[in-house]
Length: 288
Image 1 (tube, helix red, strand yellow):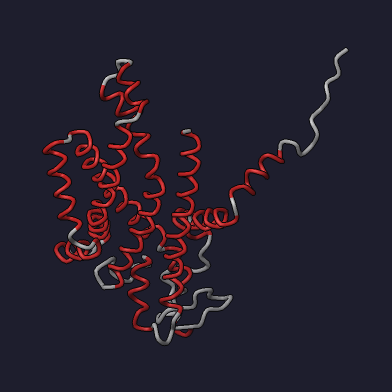
Image 2: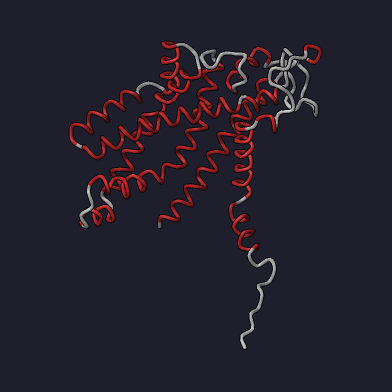
């Protein structure tokens, strides 16, 4: 007779707990903050205690308290609620600008690396011309030509950050193109498009995951900088940069109008970069 012994309780939970603790407190905290930002973008009413447009002149410029975590602005609106409701717009700007930058970078980087010769030289020289202009200055030029708006902010930040990504994509493609598994795939008779799609593209882009996540936070920071200069999303929008622009006149008296929204921007940029680096480590480990 064969005896079947039931598994002990908690055996399956131990590997899960070990994996969670192996992530590290910093990554866990960053992941939690990114999750809060995503919740704020999808369902802001879950986190915001007030409407972002609710005016209470009797409670204008109130200090941060349990009733108003980030204080109130000159119209008595709850700053924390405005930060929460502005998350969707700010995150949309960051994702849109990074998407434009990476889309153009992939096109320029792959064409330059795979074509070589005159084409590679021409694209490299064009990118060097872009590099001659500081990214924020190029974004200011685009906004000044087409006027401040959400679309202009996305396009301006995306175009200005594209050259750096394009140079990195080109370098990654050149590195992967001469790898042994690419030569093996070509020796097996795979078509050029199949080699690019199944081998070259995923392996060239894998190390850039952390760069993309960094770009999202950086795009939000740059868009906020444009808004702080009065060239971003116009008020009374609760977009994070617009909140900085609205609070700069009170920075010496009501510090929370400037410091607390700015702190959220910095924390999100750090958190999304930390999560991206962790994802990159996992992808590199899986690729070995």
